[in-house]
Length: 232
Image 1 (cartoon, rainbow, N blue to C red):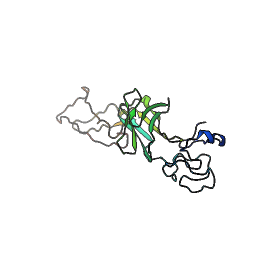
Image 2 (image 1 turned 120 degrees about the vertical axis):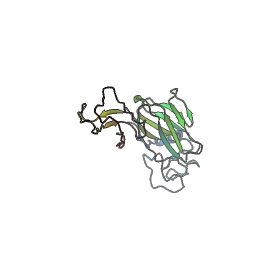
Image 3 (image 1 turned 90 degrees about the horizontal axis):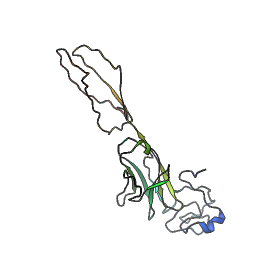
Image 4 (image 1 turned 30 degrees about the vertical axis):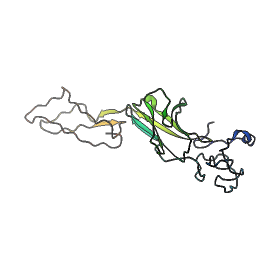
């Protein structure tokens, strides 16, 4: 059974004497900038804790110097072929590294500002002094959908998982396929598009040769917009 997100299973008492690195605290705190606290029941800020916990949070709020994640969207939906960003925010990073990992094959895509994958569609975006580390995916395919993990090289490692959904837009014209009208009257045609972001490429209407205008009223077309959300 895997370890729950944001938690880790601490080693046994016998393992603690040899397995724990110097920067790992024995109490409820995970990582502190000043190293371990004096006693096994101490918090990283020096205060006493009444008992140890079996599964401490990987980003305890009361630990000074511990890295923690910022609130960013963890479920992202994009149409096929439209570039998308997964944004991971980390405070109190210090000299630790941030890596993006694809969960289905545990492939390390980026670390800090460096891109390791040979797939040119994936790249790391980061501005100096910014707490946000971005995995950029150009021209995403349906096969790119899945879970991605933003991992911080703390001891123990902390992570946040992101779900990317890639959808294929589909257009449907509502109503009957054939419409009989009086010459000179108005005709409204509604096209419903599923799976397209509001800022996606504008919709193009084509008038096929099968559409013929007759009568003295001539013909013309006027387009309107009534889209909401991802349907338009």
